[in-house]
Amino acid sequence: MAATLTLYRTTIGKKAVMAITGFIGYGFVILHMIGNLKIFEGAEGFNEYAHFLRTVGYPMIPERGLLWVLRIVLLASVILHVVAAIQLTRLDWASRPKGYRETRRKQATFASLTLRWGGLAIFLFIVYHLAHFTFGLGIPNFGGHETAYQNVVAGFSNPINVVLYIAAVGALGMHLYHGVWSMFQTLGLNGPRTDGFWRGLATLSGILLFLGFSTVPIAVITGLVR
Ligand code: HEM
Image 1 (cartoon, rainbow, N blue to C red):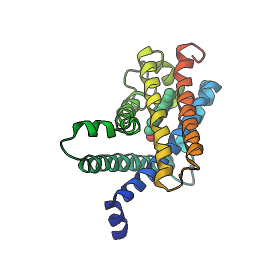
Image 2: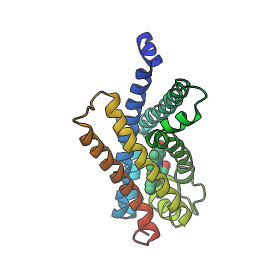
Image 3: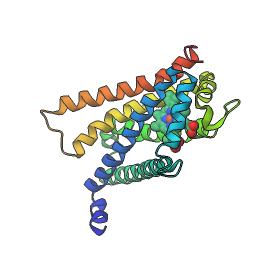
Image 4: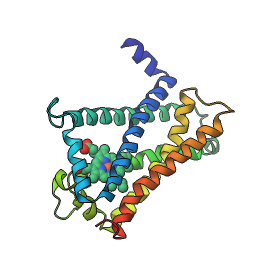
């Protein structure tokens, strides 16, 4: 425990925490995106799937037991990811020469800007998203978890939500592109010869996630899913 804390105090320790917690979040969004595509199977298929997520493992483990374990792991990962990001940003700012505003601006690369501001936007989106689909904010006839399909259709019948979600998953795609690439750097897997490969993989995963997630609001607003 003491060794872990000592490692965390170093920059590389904080970056390792960012890489591991980011990877957990990444795994979640991929599974969530694939799961969302079940909307094309219709109301019964989608609601059955939502029900399965809540009861998986039952009766061997309590109903919603696994769901809560996953929620706690995910929440802890998000908190650690955000805390380490804030601490690394502070260290980064503190290490810059003082009084050279120009240098400071130039050094804030596009990647670091999209990671920090994009990260903040995604965090705000998650808060809105939970209020929206989990607690029913602004959804007419919200029926709770058992009517997940109807909730999604009602939610995206409002064009403001369609625009908001597409913008958020756009920010997510960019964030994951930069995040996946910097994870390979942190883990020391990247070098001059492999850079093109990892960058290609990071780009592909960012684009696929953006397309996979935005398909659902687009399908609802165009009437393909209703
Ligand atoms: C078009 C995109 C998306 C759609 C249609 C969608 C849909 C849903 C739905 C229907 C639920 C279940 C609500 C419930 O019954 O409790 C849910 C939960 C959730 N979504 Fe999304 N989602 C989208 C994008 C995202 C993104 C991009 C993230 C993360 C960055 C995310 C994170 C979550 C989380 C954390 C939960 C709560 C899981 C739980 O604890 O039950 N979603 N989403």
